[in-house]
Every structure is written in C-alpha cells, then in structure tokens.
Image: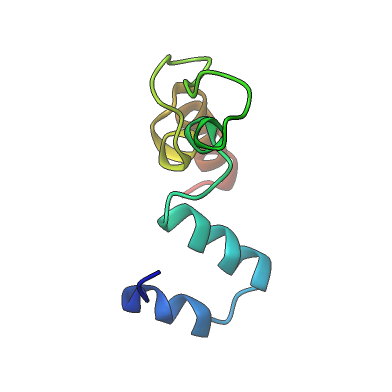
Length: 80
C-alpha cells in the first residue's frame, strides 16, 4: 500500500485518536458505507436508502439529503 504523504499532517494534529482514524478512513473512502460493505460481499445493494445513489462515506456525510438537513440543523443550533 503506498504511503499517502498528504495524510501525514493528520497524524500530527492535536485531536483525539478516534477522530484521526475516522478522518483517515473518510479521506481514503474506507468508512463502512454501503459500497464498502458490498465490496466485502455483505448484505444490501450499496445504495443510499434515501437517495438511491451509491452510498460512500462522502455521500453519507455531505451530499445525502438527510446529511444536508442535519448540517443545516447543526448550523442553526450553533449560530453564526
């Protein structure tokens, strides 16, 4: 597996290890999303149940309709 040098600042950041690992998985598209589960011959069809597009980590967090609504809620709750 090639070393991804652009990810090295992530490991030096002053954030909890759990968050570093989550971000590392997200940036490498290795979160346990529908497409990743499908690659491992898991259950399901790999599609987002709300949007019916391939369910990737980026889709779950940023482009899904439900994610958009959640981020809008968080933005409203936290204020400007």
